[in-house]
Length: 200
Image (cartoon, rainbow, N blue to C red; front, side, top):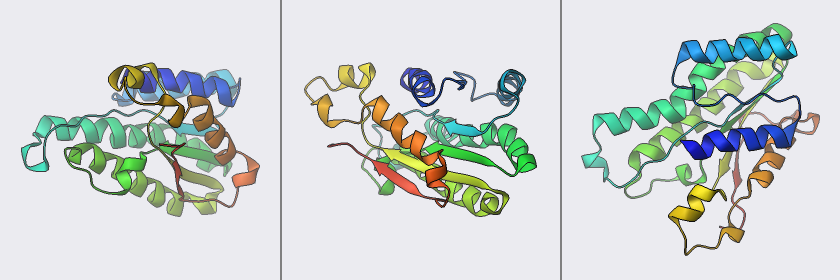
């Protein structure tokens, strides 16, 4: 999804100049492993993982969702978390240190009409976050989930021209939350699902 690809670069640049944005490869395990290896070669280690990849689809009621749409939503949103974590977490475990922020969705806190596949996939991200936090906290790794509402992107502005983007979440504001959760100030936070909704 182009918005998430672009957002990854924006957030990486906002959080730290020693950041590395992986774009458009989260669907392929070998590509993820190669990108992670490149990041380690460049920086020596990975201290923070932000799983920003995802996608959105809606329109069908649950009883009309086809297998292709279901699989696509689950793979793009939850599967990407699994693949990148598989490549990054072993290094964090070896150092007994790390921060992982998964990006869910505020809408996934409850069911919504015509959004069943997306809601299920983003709900899975929350449950994966909680499971990872329980598994990794004693190893010095913090895992948390951020739940943004509508993010102010060119794509969302084009899709909702009558809405007021001033009420949405600015990418810079989302980056500030990520920065906090990856800082020492958040060292006691594990398994949180933090809503970031702006005024929307």
